[in-house]
Amino acid sequence: MKKLFLLFSFLFLTIALTGCAKGEVVMELSRFGSANIECKIVAMPLVASQLTSVKEDFSSDGFQVENINEDKMQGFIAKKHFNSLDELNNTKIVRGFELNKNRTQTDTAKSTEGESKKAAVIYKQGLLFDTVAVNTHLDLRANKKDETKESQWLVKNLLQQVNLRFVLKLPTAADSSNATTSPDGGKTLVWDLILGEDNELSAQVTYLNPYKAGGLLIAALGAGIIIWRKKRRNMTNDKTA
Image (cartoon, rainbow, N blue to C red; front, side, top):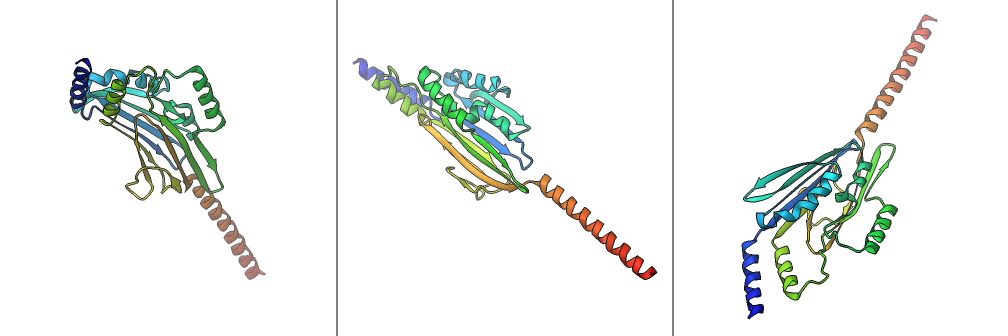
């Protein structure tokens, strides 16, 4: 009888929380070597309190965080501008976000060691073209320790009601990526994030740096003007002679 009561309770809660949460992280990379990140997450009031730790992560990384209400949901929006792409590696959302805060110290040490060996965002500058490679993950696995079969069933159904996306906006079409979709042929990459899994995100793009292109054009024009003046001076001297 107790199990039957729990089952009906789980069913009721699942139906009540249909579309219980949604969120989107948008990271936009500029041709000039800067970036912007904006994250919006909202949830039904019953589960909105679970967003506190996530919001604290953004605040500790220097994001401007604002509480919002949207479609009877509660949550927050976090924004930050980065003058350098290298600064992105200092944020939790880029270097490897973890939903489960209750991992063992051994797991945490292994993760930290792996992250220190390889940056999540690698920015390589060339003569005219720059290359940006993004390789990170969003670990949205929950702590399954001491969970009963009933609670695991409930969590699985609740996770299906959550809609999360990671969007990467690039200066030009990506050379490669493992994105779920792209609405514009590779310039905007979209990953549908799955709660309960460790989501891998990878992309690479090479693009023309306008600063370098402009500098080269000015140098070429300057050289052309110098050569033209020399030729004109030589022609004048020849006529005078």
